[in-house]
Structures are given as structure tokens and as C-alpha cells.
Amino acid sequence: MNTRTVYVPTADGTALATDVRLPDGTRPVPAVLIRTPYGREAHRAELRGWAAHGFAALAQDVRGRHGSPGEWHPYRGHEETDGAATVAWVRAQAWSNGEVVAVGASYAAYCALVTALAAPEAACDAGPEADLDDFHRDGATDNLRRDGAPGYLHGDDGVPDAVIAAVPALGLTETAREPGGPERLWARAGWWAAHGDRRDSDPDALARALADDPRLLEHLPVARLAERLAVSLGRELPSWPGLWADRARGRLVALGSTARLPLLAVGGTRDPFAEDTVALWRGWGGPSRLLLGPWGHRLTADPAAPARARVNLGALYVRWARAALAGRLEPTRHGAIALGDSGRWHSTRLRSTPRPASTQDATPQDATAQEGAEWRPEAESRWSFGSPTGLRLLHGAEFNADPDRPVRSDDLAVPAEGERADRCLLLSPPLPRPLDLAGAAVARINVTADTPCADWAVRLTALDPTGRADPLAFGIVRRTGPPGEAADISVPLGTLGRRLPAGTRLRAEIAGHHFPAHARNPHTGEDPVTATRLAPSRRTVNPRGSALHLPVVARRRYVEPAPEICR
Image (cartoon, rainbow, N blue to C red; front, side):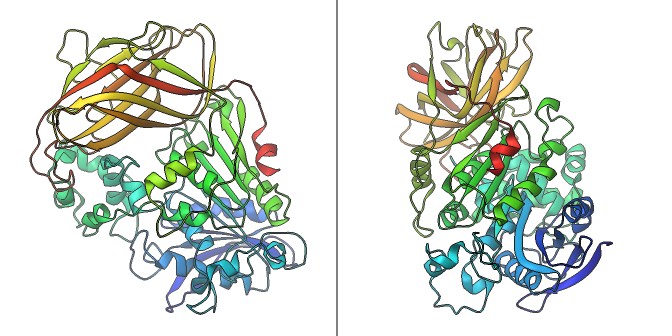
């Protein structure tokens, strides 16, 4: 059957443009739903693929985007109610067997998740007094499909039965700020220029603006950057300041702990949202699977993705969806992490059950404390600073973090010895043998700043025997405190999945900025989003008591990703 476009009514009467592709035959079938702000027509091939495997496949433009009327307000409540209305509409169709899998990548993953985690009153006729716990208790109906077989259906018309969330963008705060506080300037400026306050998309908008105005991202205050950007774009971005006003973090991860339906979380170790992908997986209340490849935000669609680590994600999604709907998934949280471009995948499993989190009281610190106790590396390798067998200090134990001359995020070159230090630089001896890394890395450093507020950026680079540099890990945190006071700081470096060959050296840089990826800390104590005055900050890194902690694979458990994810 050819793809046809229908208009699905929502609770307030707005009809959303939706492409529908049905498989051959007349019997009722399960459905896959994609809700996206990036244009439903870009998913035509994906819809054909799902339909070829016996699924009804739908792609919908979210409210206010492309073919759907209404106003476009990213990450606002209409995604929950519109998603619930669409799932209920799917279940009412003659071609539907009642089973729905919500699928999406990036913002579309957010749409899938908020639909799956929506309060019951957003999904059906339950009144506002309905208790969310009534829809998640471990009763008989919680684990039955409509045909009576074991499954995970909630029984709510507007809640899907399973979720596939790839490189999930979990909210305004999660996309705009690092968990440690610093603002993601370059990525947010690029996304807002391409998609914000407009019905369609212009992916190259920021690149053109920077070609016209190379110092565009240096504009202060950051809150008014859109005014300067508007000159190049030829349009206003009125929603830009509101992006930075939002500070709530962790809502979907906390809500996920109450879920009972299956989740497949897919991400890349080079994706900026990798840690949100991992947090979602390990905090999920139902059966959850993690697939973490050596990919960026485009996953396997990126031409630079390592050939030996390529996975047919479409085939894997189909296989997982069938297992999830049939109730064949083990009630566990496990997955597979690629060891870089080696072609090897390492099995990973949570060691304990996550504690349910309150969606009202959860904080980033609470989430970190809960999650840190759940997934630990098999072995931790400690690389002490200043040690001949760890990380030898090259220079910069004292350095100057000057926001007028920040360390650049887009340049891996480091200053030569003898130049004025703008970072602390350390180097390891060559690895005597290959090293497999899988899990969370962290730098624990003892530092001092002479300003009341300071960002601490740690960049870890792998240098092969020829000296070629390959980014390995990065983390940045913000600390406020009395000037001149020494402090012990932990800088999370993300989840690693790499095989480092013998002869590799590790280079660590500790700096005060990571621009333009992140906004410059003004060092005055003012909010970096509204500050208009910048000041330098004198920094000290004490090698004694500072170390890099890496997650070493002690026992190799190689797996094939598809069977591991689908069991």
C-alpha cells in the first residue's frame, strides 16, 4: 500500500498531519508511531521498512511544524496530550490490533517518552483524581496483552506498549546545560537557528550566520544572542531567552522509574546526550535495554561511523519490538557497549534494582547518587597525576583562564612548552598492552581558583604511536565558592566504550573554558547567560590528590548486539 496522509484530531481539535503506511493483508497489525518536528516526509523509507515487516507505520508532524497547524513550543505539555490522542486514534482504527510502539530519535525520542510516561488523564477519560499508581501496580492486568497473553500493556488507550528512544533529548534543561551547570552554547544556537520559532527547518542556518559573522558566538549577553543572530537569519527568535530560564532537570528519568513497559535506549559514546541515554536506561522501571555504539548524534547514518561497528538498526528495532510486544524480554536491565571501532561489543548489566524516584523531589544530585550505586565498572584503573606510571605533568600546574582567549572546543592542538599556560597539561607513558574501557570515567582533582565562580573542563585525548589525536572523553562542571579556597572536585567524563591499542598515550587537559561548545564563564559570579563583563581567573591544579579513574574491562564478555538486546 502507498503512504497516505491523514489528519489526526487532538484534544483541542487541532488536526496533526500524519503519514500512514500499512502492510499488505487485511488482518489487524501492531503499529509504530513516530512524532517529529523535523518533517514527517523524511521518514518515508523508515515507514516502508516497518510496513515490510508487518507493522502499520505512522510519522506525524508535531504541532506547529511542517504540515501540522498550531504553535510550536519545544518541550512543552502539548507533546504529552497530542501524543496520547494519536495513540488512542491508532488503537481505534480497523487495521490496528491495539499494540503500539512509540519510536523516535532526538526530539522525537522526547515525544515518544512523554507519551509513554504521560499521566493517565492525558491519555484517556480518567479524571484528574486518577492515581498514577493504579496504572502501574503489579496486578494481573498490568502484564496482559489484549489477547490475554503475557505482555506489558497498561490498558490506557493513549499510552504505548513499548518505547524505542534513540539519542534522546530529554528536555530544555538537559539539552541546554551540562549536568554540572555550564551552558551548551554552540549546539543550542545551531538547533534554535535551524528549528526554533519557525514552521520548517534550515539545518545550515548557523553555519551561514557564522560565515557572515565569525565572532557571533562571542556576543554578550548570551541571553540576547538571538538579536545578533536575527540579522543573519532575517527573522526573530523570541523563544531564545526562555531556553535559558528553564532549570528543571531529570523529570523524565524520574518518571521512567515508575514505568512498567519495555524500553530500548540507543545512543552513541560520541553523542552529547549519551549520559541522558544511559541515565534513562538504568533508571527505567520496566525491562530496559541499552545499545551504545561508537557513534555521534546521527548514529549509523553518520558517514564517519566506524565500518566495523555498523549495526542494522532498522532490523534490530523490528526484532526488539516483536519481542517486547510478545512479552519475551527478560525483566532485567542490560545491554551492549561497543569497544570503539574494534568491532567488539561488551555486555553490560545493572547490578541492583533502581530505587523509585519522586518526580517532584528529584534533583540532579539525587539522580547521580542513585545511579552511581547501580552500575559500576568491573575494575577501576587509577591514573595519578604527577606519577611516572600515571599522568606526568608537562606544564600548567598554574595557569590563566582568560575568557577573552578561551581554550577552544574545536581545536585539539595544545600549546608548546614555554608558552604562557592557558591549561594544565598531562601525559601518560605508552600503554604496554591493549586496554578495553567500558563504563563511566571520572577525573577527581584538587584545584583552586581566585574567582568566586569557575568552570573546570577536563578533556581526555588518545594519542596513537604516530601522535594522531583522537578525542576520548570530556567533562565540565561549575563550582562556586570563596576565592582562593582549595577544593576537591569530581568531573564526570561520560560513559566510555573503547579499545586502546598498545602504544597509546593518554593526554589530559584541565582548562577553565571549552568555547564555543560551552558559554564562557565570566568569573564575576554573575550568571553566564546574562553577564556582559568578563574577567580572567588564576587557576592551580594540585597533582597530589588528583587522579583520572577509568573503567577497565577485567573480564571480557563479548556479545552480538542484536541477540543481547532482544533477549
